[in-house]
Length: 259
Image (tube, rainbow, N blue to C red):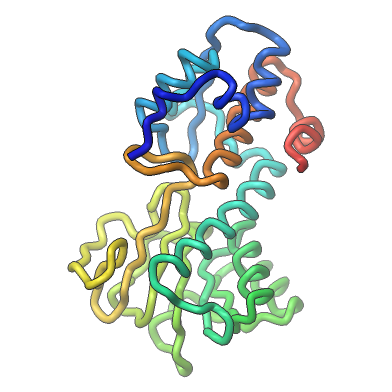
């Protein structure tokens, strides 16, 4: 179990190096930052720690800044989230991605990052999209492309289907076969889909498919945060700080968060 309240100022600074440095450039008093969009809210203990130790009160509100409106944030997020999702799939299912066939559903930056990473790992990748421009780019990049309506009518076995939530709503997961992972930021791609228990933690049955639960992109309650979750949180706070002080454009943000 993670105890966010036990973090010292030095520890928080080490975990959020970019955002807290930017925050302190302008002020040392408590600063409230709000974000909207698809990213989930922070667990209350972490929000309290950020407020008390870091001087930042980070709250999710419907009218808050949507971080995905920033192209640079979207690029950084998609690379980090793709790595997080693929590691979670391997750890929670023991699936070796090399030599498998994987369908990546969606038409945004995360879909592109997942497809590229999977091909690098040795998987045969199918891009599933109804967006003509995405289909054009995917075909030119050497991917097989199929429309969403053909997801459940496959002529070859698909070992894993990754739903990104980009350009598609809730899909009939129970008509698919193999493993299914919902990589959308807030789990919206499989919201309301019922599953039955399986022999593995984090895996539930939905018809012929096995739905693999994915970690949230931001730190979660009662779980030790990964380095990827801290990096996404650091980028989110940095973006909001720059926006609050009218010092943020994509170039400045990109320079700040580039490794």
